[in-house]
Length: 96
Image 1: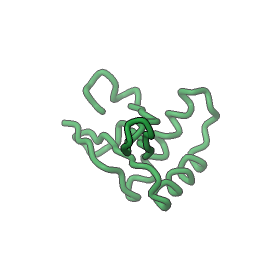
Image 2 (image 1 turned 90 degrees about the vertical axis):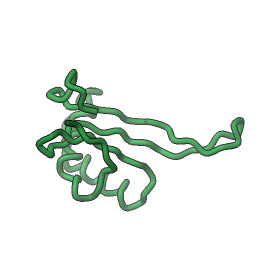
Image 3 (image 1 turned 180 degrees about the vertical axis):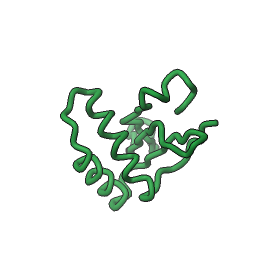
Image 4 (image 1 turned 120 degrees about the vertical axis):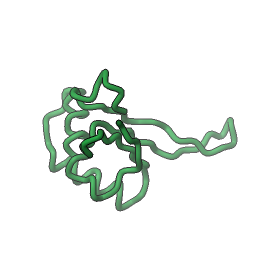
């Protein structure tokens, strides 16, 4: 069974691996430390929301990252889904 929940600093290492995989999908060089530093900044500045999918064994299998914004036309606040990634093993199984 897959669980979707808010990411925490406890997830940092596993989430950094997922973010690195996401970046490699977009042909960026692997750099897990840079991904970890980026995520640490997001948690520290609380400028995004990150949700993770967790499989039945407790492993993270994917994430989404949302950023806040506003619409002057709609006169409201909104969230933009900027990043979405499911690891290859989690695809087509309902993870995320």
